Amino acid sequence: MTKITADFTGLENSSDQIAAKLVSLASFWDASASLAYLEDVRDVFNAQLLTPILNGDLAITWMPLANLLNDPEAWVAATFFAESQVGLTMLPDLARADVAGETPAAFGGPVGRVSDNSLNARHLIQATGAAQPAFGRRPTSGLRNRLPNSGKGVASAGVVGAGGALPSYWSVTNMPAGSVEVLSLAEKNGRPCVRIRINGIPTGSPRIRFASGVDQIPVETSQDWVHSVWLQRVGGDQTNINAVFFNLIGDDAGGNNTGGISSTTLSDTLADDVRRSTAGTISNPAIASIRGEISLSWASGAIDITLDVSAPQLEIGVEATDVQITAADNFAVTQSGQPSVDYIRFDGVSDMLRTASVFAGGLNGQAFVLGDAGCMVSDLSIAAGGDFIFGPTTWNGAPAGAVETVSGGTGRILGAVIRAGAFSEDEIDRLIRFARACGAGPLSEINPWQPQALGAGVVDLSRLDLAYTDTAGTLLAQPGQAVAALRDGNGAVVATQATSAARQTYGRHRRRASAIAPNAARMSVRLSHGRKRMSQTASPVRRPVRASTLTGCRSCYMMSWGPPQRFPSSPL
Image 1: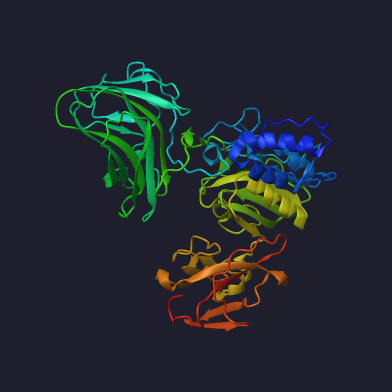
Image 2: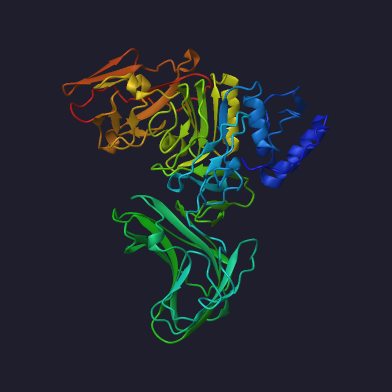
């Protein structure tokens, strides 16, 4: 929700004047996608509006007193607390390092307070350092580059160790002291660039590394990863360098090398400023983290080579994507042509924020929370004299693990609005559009059902908040994903399916009648004494059911089936 400086004077009174400024703003973001951004702006701009102004077939609306583009905090306050409703906001733009709220939070630094913007002065605070979440920023398109620092960081020109320094987390191994020098930190073709001279007799094959095993960039088995970097030789030569390799290396949980994942031979003379990459799949279960390196194969003799190393990137996938520059331990990530959004990251263990003052009369209402994966609207009830608590894993009234669900496991929360009373359907629609503009993912959970409503041994497939994609029952299934486990109303895992090909598909529809497919089935399964029975009120669904996004309707959950079949006696 970073402020965007595209000032409206408040005097614009024609569609042409407003459209011109919006198009100018969209062009600033990405000239090739002006119309798409203009439509996004139009969608988010729909709040507390005066008369809509039309420009061709694109409706542009104008709100002079609370302009989202100039001041999103004012937009939230004016839109959802215009009648002085009780509640609070948690907007990362207003994160502060100290409880008093005097020092802005630094990237990667602790958050001691998030100032409330609802005019209720319900600030969220955390005085205990070990329990303070962290502040960060990422592009609205998402965070892809996992390197802790792909820019210049704390680098300085000079001989490394004698006045000069490589960027934080970078290193050159197998060279004696005084043989590595940073010659320049000048940008190159719009990218941060470090010019490194390696001159001397190595003690082994020199390696330029962008992270070490102890830095722990976590991976999972079967994931595809790609490492890329712009690399050009600008001085010296390749005398006594037998070959140049670009490697992906795996490390175990202790940071110990478990072997190579992939290696690409750079067979040219490195004379051109070219982006180079290597990609591989994590196949060894012992690999817990990953790193990349440029290796100069050496056997004997002195070497003298100067390289321009620019914009290294380590990301999930098989091909390198648009460059993202990272800093501050990956808490400050930017991408050219993409707006940025601030976030607060919760570690899921101890990080927690709570209101500095209690609700003397209590609060019955709803919370809207947005994170990397999407957004969630949940009911909440705070007793008289109670407070609102966010973290480590959930918030008042939300399901267990809600922080992980809405953040997609990253812990990154992009904002929250908590208010007495229920949000209207129109308000939820505007909040969801706001979340999308802030870079939240597609997840939209409206009043997620609580599993405590069922008893032990009962699984109701019409409300499958109890479906998981892993047999341990820890990762909630999303629409279109295969179900590996079910939990009953008491939270116990009661059915599993270890065979991927035999798993059923999770889906969701809204309870509004017009949104339900004519052939949709309401299914329930009651598990007792090791036997399973399935009852259906309609024909089985013959295809996976995708998520519907009707706003203001509670979600119902379903599983899609192939030909009519029975549950096996043991697995799911």
